[in-house]
Length: 138
Ligand code: TYD
Image 1 (tube, rainbow, N blue to C red):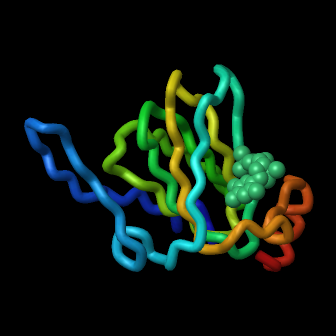
Image 2: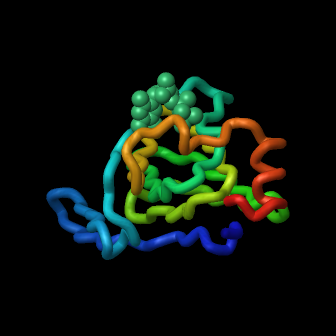
């Protein structure tokens, strides 16, 4: 997997004077079955989250409120996506180093995952990640 396999997906939007509505569906806008949903909020200024890679877990990340950057890295190339609209989601395949940062005040990051929480699926050491990429283990 490379950073080019990350995809920014525009979600449906129903604009309404009563307020707008967007939605996501698994195996439609999100290209996997959702096993887990979690969210990150109340991030103090300057903090970063999620500096790790997943061996198998795929993700879909939405900035439900505010904005933040998602930095992805395949061991060769890096790319930064700024998420700042609740009607866009970023698909991140497994096997990429990724980090969330530059959170705006009151931002809310919603993350859908293809696996249940499984610590063994995490690669938290960047040098180990680079070695695994070199050896094509992920
Ligand atoms: P952590 O992996 O450090 O968050 P980040 O993705 O920002 O690096 O997770 C923080 C804590 O939350 C850690 O103790 C594990 C726990 N956790 C769960 O129990 N289930 C989950 O789905 C997630 C994402 C985290």
